[in-house]
Each structure stands twice: as structure tokens, then as C-alpha cells.
Length: 316
Image 1 (cartoon, rainbow, N blue to C red):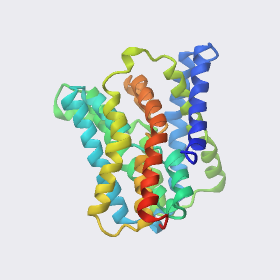
Image 2 (cartoon, rainbow, N blue to C red):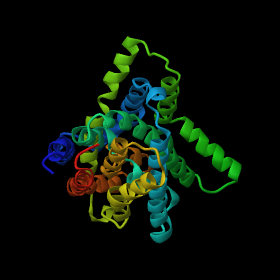
Image 3 (cartoon, helix red, strand yellow):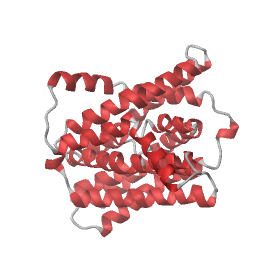
Image 4 (cartoon, rainbow, N blue to C red):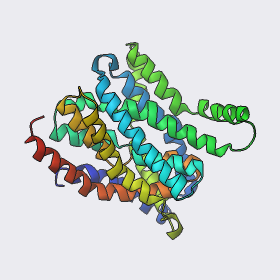
């Protein structure tokens, strides 16, 4: 835990700052809405585009790793989705956003710093591969299901057409696919444009965390529902177990990369989870789940690291 606490503190501090700002009146709900829109439509697409175009994915690709992490993530996604949809009888949109929280890791701000500190060089290869799975597979899958849930009724053709229109209007998805395509094609972005996009993207995490704090300030008892349980358990328990199981089944993943996959999948959910959930009026439950998972993750991730170090003697 001593190694993880310094990484968690800035996250909890910025969330707390947003909370205090709203509770004291220095920030209004309207301003929080505006900041959330800025993150989703500008800063988040910028950081994703900048991250992918700054990597040569064609040189770092490891297919067994991608298969194991994607397979484990899909299994965890399906389990959390089924728990919310079939056991708790939640709407399709709620189940989809819940499954996103149960499988989308905070790779950049928790997973990577911890993995690079404990495991070393393999973390620099594993991070872009993990983000590729999250951004190409998990986030689009969750958003597609969530949009389908918003447009229930009518013919199948009208349902699919409406969903496609809303997805195509999301800058986030354009940034994901454009950044990935340019990275694999080894297309260089002009320095001035790259610096500008990178500067915009840097605002994503701190503003998103401030927004989370503002959302938490509006929580009430009704928001602390049974929905939070499957999301938090899915992220901190089911996801790492599913990824570990796939690593056992799929050969060819180097030990260092396998350890990174376990660490990444054990991290709490992605920082912008409540911001993405805000589009579907689910931000309060998402924020509550994020806070709980971040705090609980201090203990669960510490336990995962202890088991990894004990099983490998620190040799990755």
C-alpha cells in the first residue's frame, strides 16, 4: 500500500476539490455540466488521439497479449452486464454502463505507474496494448449497447440507424479510430498540431476528476443502490480473475507482460467513467462506484502486487 497511496492521493484530492467547490457554491451544477461536456467532446478525444499517434503500435503489437486481455475483459463485461440486466433487472443502458465500469481500467494514472514501478520495462509495451483493447473494444461496445437502450421501440432498421447516427456524432469514437489508424499506418502528425492536441488532452484527467467531485456533492442515499456492488466487484475482482484465467489459457505471453495485464486489470475504473455515464443520466451512481473502487483498490491492488511478487520472486 505505501507504493500505491502516493498515486491515489492526487486522484482523491481533485475529487475532493470538486466536491468542496460545489458544496461551498464556488462551482454550480451548470458549470459542472459544462466541464463534463468539455472533457467528453474535446479533452478526452484529444488525449486518446495524442496517445495513439504517439505510439508505433505496429512495432509493439503482441497478439497473445491482446487476445488474453481482450478475452478476459469481454468475460468480465458479460458477467457484470448479466448481473445487472438479468439479476437486478436493470435497463439495457444501465447494464451497459455498469459493465463499462466493471471492465474499463484506470490504465494511465494507476495501472501504468504501479506496473512501471514494480515490473519495469514491460509496462511501457503493455500500456498501449491495454489502451487499444479498452478504446477499440470495451468503450465502443458499452456505448453501442447504451445507445441501443435509449432507442428501444420501432423497427430494427430504425433502431440501428438511430444508434449509428448518435455514435457517429461522438468525437470520442472518431478520435479512437482515427488515432489507431494513423498509428498503424505510421503517419506522422505535424509537431505544432501534435503539441496543440497534446496540450488540450492534458486537461482531461484533472478536469474529469473535478467533475466527479462535483457529481459526488449531489449524491443522496437513493444513488447508493445495489447497482454499485456488481460494478465495484466486477472491476476489482472479476476483471483481474478473468484476465488471469485467459493468460493461463493463451500461450505466448511473456511473464512481464502477463504481470502487467494482471496489474492493469486490477486497477479501479477509468477516471472519466462518470463523465461518460453522464450522457445517460447515470453519473451519480458511476461516481459513487468510482470513489468506492478507488478506495477499496488501495487494498485489493496491494494484495495483487504481494501475490505477484511472491509467485515470481520479483523476477519479471
